[in-house]
Length: 309
Image 1 (cartoon, one colour):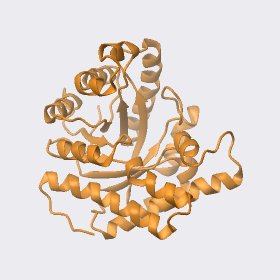
Image 2: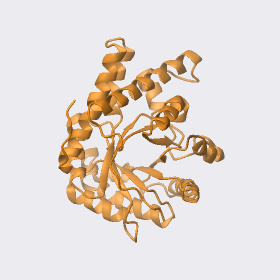
Image 3: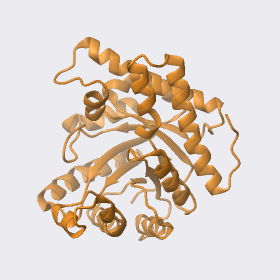
Image 4: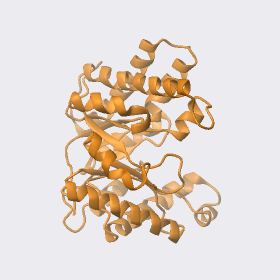
């Protein structure tokens, strides 16, 4: 069983790879050296925005980044030297199910960077494909067991997507599924993964509109003595107003210690930078202001006074 993590945690995730490379840059196929440099530079811009936000009042002890090794190795090393919280993505980007980016060598890659958290993303619907769920659970338990053995904190991002049957029940409306079915399926998924021996210190979960659903999530991740395990809420590329509602709702619930909002933070700034519509400094400032904004929203909802930019 995991020891847990219960301190404030405000993550800026930019571990996106496949969707980022194809969506932001329209690069297809194996990247050339020049293309890799362009992608890596854009992630450096995001990191510079993160660092600038610290001057705006984001508490350093709670501030962190979630990034990939492929384009972010130098950023990870710099963040570690500066004492920032780091989370390292371990999964293969663009895969329909959780697989290790570096196969059976996953442990050596984690050990090389020594991140604050080893992070996995899983799309897991307990009423979905049983074989896929079984394969994913086996890999996640392997990661969980390794992290436990070496005292490496483990973060699991849980996405619960609808099956065709769920969408049919929702008459084809994703919003109906989100409101009426997903919260209960999230609880089922957490219990199933727990029962299979998957023990994250932090669950990174999709936003919930109802406080009661957030309370049920916390009660479930902390069941059976897991009292120090906590949750953070993810942005899921939602519009700004929706992200704010999720943050405000989650912040009011003990056990939700922060957030991880990525694309809604950096996408427009980096797209403008890539298109040469803004300067590098302007892009950095846009990322910094948006990240600081999420921190301010979350801390206000917790009753904490935040220094303004």
